[in-house]
Amino acid sequence: MLPYRKLLTCDDCGHMHEPGRLCPNCYGENKKITQAMQESMVSMQGLSPVEHEALPVFKGEKVNTKDGFHEGKRIFEVPTERPKWFSNRLTIKSNVTTSSDTTVAKPTNLA
Figure 1 (spheres, one colour):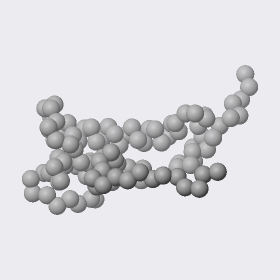
Figure 2 (cartoon, rainbow, N blue to C red):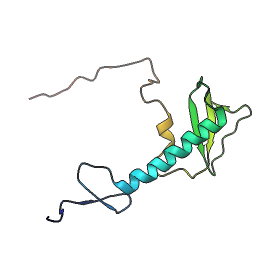
Figure 3 (cartoon, helix red, strand yellow):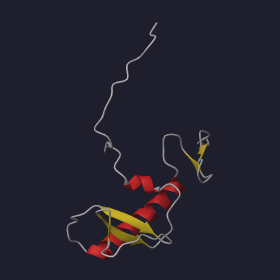
């Protein structure tokens, strides 16, 4: 059996992984964060159906709220620090347009 020579180095953590596959180390870390978020949500609201969108607040972050909601989203606290890959923008819908004015850009100076 020959050794596998087509390994890549992960840009984030430096561990080796096969091409076309996730880095096992980064996947394990992401899985831990996801499980912590799920456990926090279940401990907060049990197995009841969710009626509002959820907003994760990680350890060390502050959100000013009196009723447990922020901008219509239910806040749940995650007992770990926010990972660098989980930006605040991940919780914002990207398909929402902010303006009703749309314009069509037409190409100019085509061949």
